[in-house]
Amino acid sequence: MKTIICHSFPAWDTPYVKSTIEIIKRLSSDHRIIFLDYPYTLKDYFANDHAPKTAMFSRKCRVFNTEFGKVEVYNSLPTIPVNWVENKTLFNFLMWINGLIQSLTISQIRKHVTTEETYVVNAFNPVYGYFTSKYWKGLPISYYSYDQLDFTPWASKWGKVFEPLFVRKVNRVIVSSSGLKQKFDALHERVFCVKNGVTLDHFLGNRMEKTHFRKMGYLGAFDERIDLKLLSDVAKAFPSYLIEILGPNKITSVSLPPNVIFLGKKKPNDLLPVIESWDVALIPFLSTEFTRAIYPLKINEYLAAGKPVISTNFSDLSDFESVVRVADDSESFIDGIKKEIRYNNRLKISKRVSFAKANSWEHRAGQFVKALSA
Image (tube, rainbow, N blue to C red; front, side, top):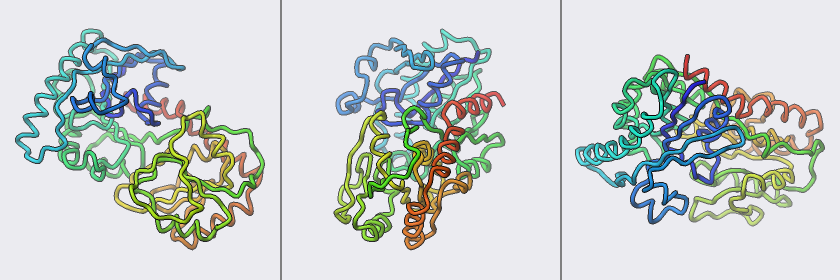
């Protein structure tokens, strides 16, 4: 049994599905999992509704018995907000202090582990990884990257500076897409790809027949990745269909045809009844430097529900060529929707579900732990 310490950017108490959380929960069935939580700041204490405010000051380990196994969650004391800093000297000084703050919790964790068969996974947190790496001395560190950090609005300023510096310090890099592997192959000699999975319990449906609800939909955050013109063209081409957006709307001002409706965010157990009513599922992403590194969670979720999937050609989707229709432009996207609705059948539905089952988070967790010791 390994001891896996996850030094995480995704928060344990996040209300969203995060690959880091899904993988480490499943690893807890066979390994000891210690989770060093998101570095909450003083600002988070007052403004973040999901922040574990008591844990931020108690420094006691929170133990969670998940459906797979036990996870030990540690929170450091609140750190200093630094994203606003423009000056590198000031940023380095404040991050040195933040690293020192986190070192107190790292020392606390290290008292309860041995170096043998203990691995540290830095989950998409390269700035803190760089400034705390010396406190993990003697333990192998892996960097887990699941997004194109250079283009994220919350980390692009300093993340792109420190990510390559941190990568030089780690033993291996684990990524979630072929696009990211191509990026890190140029930076590190040991790069492993473990793609995103699906929580089958949330998305496996009972419907094995075509739906005729005259609905289609998109699952996920409605944000800067969405091709608004394409979505508008689809809505106009199918005026008798409702297009349901199932997730938070992060675009403040958007003008779309009236048959595009926003359902907002729902709990994981409430997603399937909505998705089951869709005749087809959409991924209308723009092709950008950011999206080209994405392996979208939603593809396997759609497929687990048995739904036909139409996607733009925004990334390397070659893994899905047998079960997903990929379109290069608005015309072919709309034509693809028509064909998938018309020619959907029980055999295709069964094939999609079987494909998704092979991409479960349990399977991905197995790949992940092999990469850690490779």
